[in-house]
Image (tube, rainbow, N blue to C red; front, side):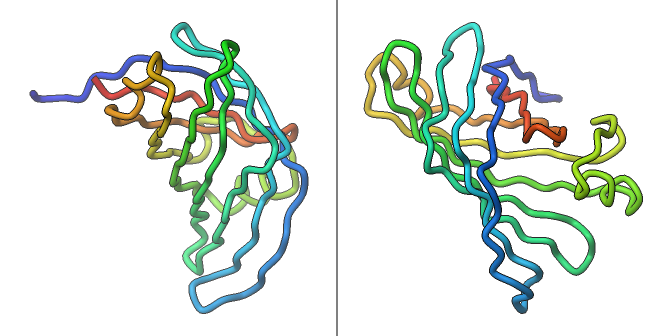
Length: 152
């Protein structure tokens, strides 16, 4: 197989409830973003993001930001799905400063990618337990938005 193919699973929109600063650790500046909720919408599954998730964000000394997120999704038909992702966001300093200030910037002006995994006990969504997924992100002022894709 010479190249990867993907299929869009859903668009994920998160609501952030605030940040808990941890501070300048040996690895970088750590803060925890609290997820208040959100929504995901796709052809095969849709629903809400339950409150209580978190993003363990690290601003590294090289200017890149790493993400380590854990969420619980609830599908419109009532299934619970654990979603975890690790990600990387970086770009020109002037663009990343605007993102940090909450200003809108074109998503193509910086790099924002994630590696996504699922975990569920719901039989109708058991296929999620056996796939690899990736995402592309953007950080508008209202909160993070991701397009999540199944790697075929």
